[in-house]
Length: 218
Image 1 (cartoon, rainbow, N blue to C red):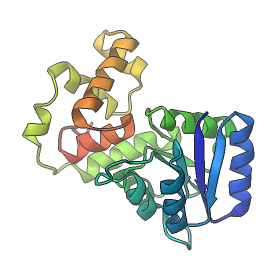
Image 2 (image 1 turned 90 degrees about the horizontal axis):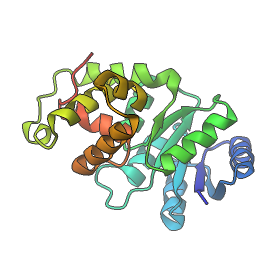
Image 3 (image 1 turned 135 degrees about the vertical axis):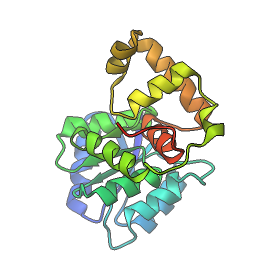
Image 4 (image 1 turned 90 degrees about the vertical axis):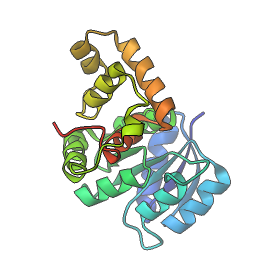
């Protein structure tokens, strides 16, 4: 069973999320009203996913996300940021802090459930209404990033092609169609790329590519 810790300063939001998740067989094992408490509870309980708000008086969600899932964390806990705010700085900050997904609170219940399951499985997710904008933001901010030659050499030519399409927001099916591959082959390639780059999901793989100047703006 997938386990979740909810971190949000609004009790009514936590209660609503708990009802939605429990109805789909996802167990809420802990709750917190702020980032500092959320980090403590998550480290103690080690859930499959932490659903994290961004703006909270008891410690902001981006700092808490970095403490749980940042690049320097030896044993990270996957974080799904779920917030009312879709400001670019929040989205960008959360993903750079190590979040495996970003979802708006007005998403349908089934989207929340799917997001939790995808993050728990290591796939990662960014709200579809934000995906293209987030990728454009990464491209803009990283346009002048020097290419990390050593990192680039980790990947084969085919892997570079697949990664490039992923960084433009393409799904597995779209990548497969563009490169005349089976979708299962694309999935296998992505799994190998994540192993080579030591990234835990598609979202953080995109962050890795842009932060090293490997992905190029469309």
